[in-house]
Length: 113
Image (cartoon, rainbow, N blue to C red; front, side):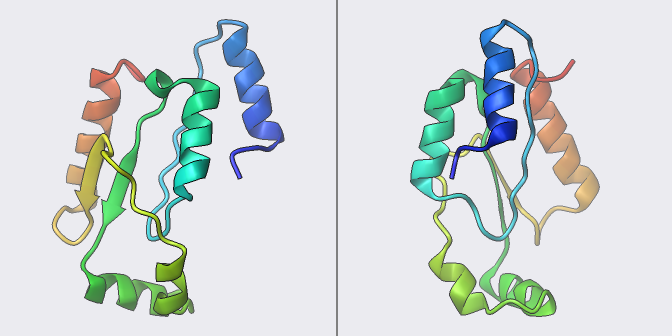
């Protein structure tokens, strides 16, 4: 759920005008669409950047199996984001290129300097 002590404290600080934030990258499984929308409503869509990481089905299955997770069960909980700010295919980009794309987006949106 889009609740919790940490999120509530962050929300209070933002209401005081403090410029701060949180960066969360969730590979493989993403939050439920309604949780994501609740966070946007609470913090303001202008304060949220969505980055979706993807991989081919074969690679995703292999990675989940290596973690001891059933790929079939994981797929049931997956809700793809609509219109993410950035989509990174982890089978096509190495880590350095992916990080450059992320930092470029964060800089462009003035989340980092």
